[in-house]
Amino acid sequence: MPAHHYSLPSQTDLKVNSGHELDRMNDPAVDLRQRLAGTNINQTTFLATDYLNHFNEIEMLIEMLPSMPECFEDICMWQPKSYECHFTETGFRDKDLAIQAYQQAPELVRKRFDEIITVLDRCIIDAIETLKETYEMGAPEHLGGLSENLGTELRRHIDQASAIINGHNENVATSEMPAGTAKTRDSIESTQAAVEALFGD
Image (cartoon, rainbow, N blue to C red; front, side, top):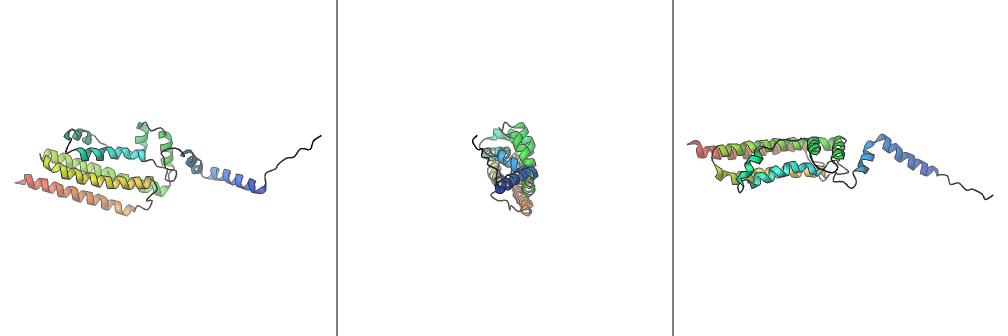
């Protein structure tokens, strides 16, 4: 009878294989990270830029307002929307995976991301209120500069959120975020003052 030769895994192979399995068991993120390959969800931050469409649209409408006044109604209808809510309602192909990944995102990354989104929501709400007041005062000539300033400020915050999502700027200082809101409020208040001065007398 011919001799049978059996190839047994080496001790090194056993250690490597068992190590990989142990990593999977101890860190569910390892398996999730592999599932993110080939999607539009960042494998490092576990976040997706698709969420920023919710903010890109309102920023675009505000900048278009001076030349397209009919955008005003759509602007006034805008409401904050959480990350999970956005993907629940969207047609994003991997929306369930996006929600799961967000829930398991690195704590510091998600903390910074959530903070900048809170600032962005507040900035947009303030911008909409300012635009409403300008319309009510009947000062359409101020819309050009106002829309440009508001759009620039919104874009700055959107870019910060995008940097965090893409892992390009994980060191975005949360201490700087309230300052950004203050800067926005200052620019808004200065524009309001100009409009009020025009109609004050």
